[in-house]
Image 1 (tube, rainbow, N blue to C red):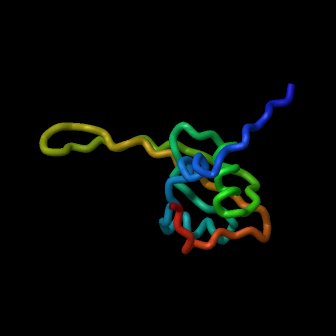
Image 2: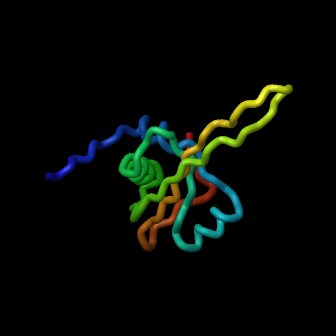
Length: 105
């Protein structure tokens, strides 16, 4: 049984990929052709792959995702939680790069 993958629109692609992650660890991953992004929590790996390929016009090899649970914080005496964040580490094929100066709209 073959599963069909739906094509996504450019608007949905910009809705999925929120912003790049620029930490020391993510900068070190770029030498292995891996880039990190904050993505929407209800997106899956196939949608993330299509979105990155559409926005940056590169060929994606694989996508790893993880959900970071929000930390507990006290604010003005009341205890609450920060938002959960989903991040994707995208591995590109050889010869493809994403210019770090590119901004997501």
